Each structure stands twice: as C-alpha cells, then as structure tokens.
Image 1 (tube, helix red, strand yellow):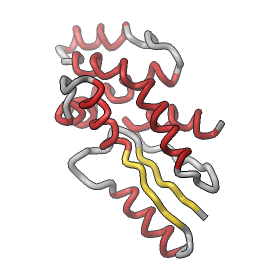
Image 2 (cartoon, rainbow, N blue to C red):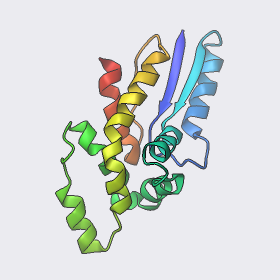
Image 3 (cartoon, helix red, strand yellow):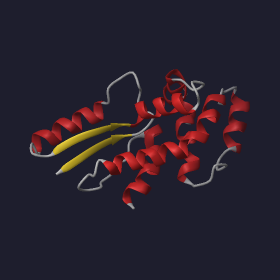
Image 4 (tube, rainbow, N blue to C red):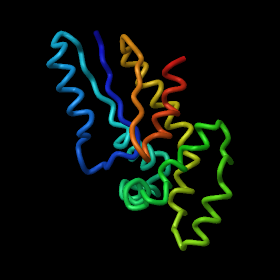
Length: 156
C-alpha cells in the first residue's frame, strides 16, 4: 500500500516536522511492506513564494507570518480566501484589526494572492503520489486552513 504523509503551512521551515517523522516511523513499524512518502507543505510554500514572487517573498517572510505572527492568525487568513473560493473573503476585518492594534500585515497581504495556485499545485502533487487511500487528519491551529483547502481537491 502507498501512504503519502502531508503537512501544510505553517510548520516552521527551520525544523523537521515531528508529526511527519513520528507518523512515518509508526507506519513503517506497523506496516513494513507499505511505501511511505512525505510532502512538506511549509517548505514547498516558501519555495513557491520565492519563485512566484520573483524573490520578493522570501523564507523569512514565511517565518514572520506563520510563526512570529501566530497569535494574530495571519497564516490562516492568507489561505482563507481559497477555503471560501472568494479572493476577497475576510479582507476587511484583518485590515481593521491591524490598524487598531498596530499589527504589520503587509507581508500576509502580499502572500494571499499566491494561495489558490499553491493549493492547486499541492493537490496535483499529492494525488500524483497515488496514495491507495485518502484519509485526512487536520493539523492544528494555523495549519488548519491549508489542510482544509487541500482536502477538497484530494477527496474529489
């Protein structure tokens, strides 16, 4: 059986995914004949942004939005338009929040237009791994939107 383990942004890009590492090992122990592969969405997102933005959005920007601004929920907001299939969904509230709380959101604003193409590419790549079953366990906190957006095309 082919098992493809996936993590989506915003896992820290400077650390290996503990979740994928543990799951990979557990699957290999429980089902040694299975083929286990991994997809590291946070690294892919950083590479994607660097490439598509022509170098304007760099890996450090992913850290700023996904880790440094975790309490502001900017990581989820970057992907929320994809979840609702509406590029303008939820754009008013973060701007008001940022103005009231002196929160810098320009980097998250710059990332948001890239989210739909990234999710589409992720779905294509995950499905190209041809997993035998499609299961999903949502990540936690700021990775939830990315997980949910990927789940739609993968389940279809």
